[in-house]
Image 1 (tube, rainbow, N blue to C red):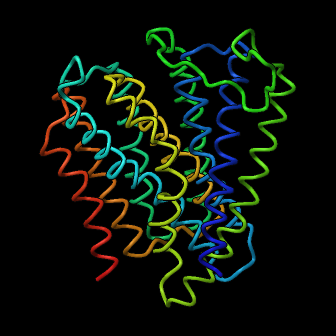
Image 2 (image 1 turned 90 degrees about the vertical axis):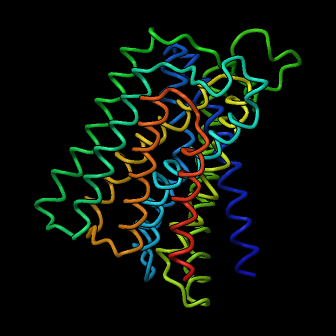
Length: 332
């Protein structure tokens, strides 16, 4: 029964994320924030929200082991994005190289990719350096620094949004029931209503996920942190990145990588900042290993995508190897 409820929680979280992200993107358009801001910031925040909510719900839960679930969700997302997600993007680019006009060469905005990867590498490394569980007097200002860093990133992204031509066309608002939804924008009130419904579904699904994950971990005799490191990002992050795999197949590298690298920045700043403030941030060997492997994946992305500007077979194999290494270590 626990496994069925865990699957149900996945479905509820993903359904809520689908409604939430679609509403966030449309609100950006209705409020006139511009295509670049919608694609680079709002879409990335929307797709990263389910994972963050799981961590927040776990932090406010009074159940034993809930803090481990929170830390697993916080650390697991950037690890997965920097390894498995990058590997899948590269794999699709390599498999469809004959279909892509640019082949395995990278066609993306270099300064944007560099900024995203450097933000990720710096702050995820800092999160790993603090794994020893520093006192609150240290964690509080550093946690605030992480939160402010993302605000700075958003400002830089909005300022540079005009340099990048938007390619994405939004899907119709799901709550918009007009016969011809392609004519005009949906009302802002309808966008806000869909956003609230999606947020409510994600919060409810996240609460159920935390409860069932703790129950299953206890029954299997497995650390809750380990299960959260693996299952939480697989359930909430990877499905949200499916668009990237199809975009890179079509040669839309800027969209494909921006969807992942933007989420990498968010996940390595906001959730970790929250974790530093509201947990002891004393990470065990598995959590530290995931950070190290995620950083290796980020460095590989910087070398292959930013420096060499191409999807190479060795880099793709490297990303998959990094992710598989963690699974093997945990399993053994």
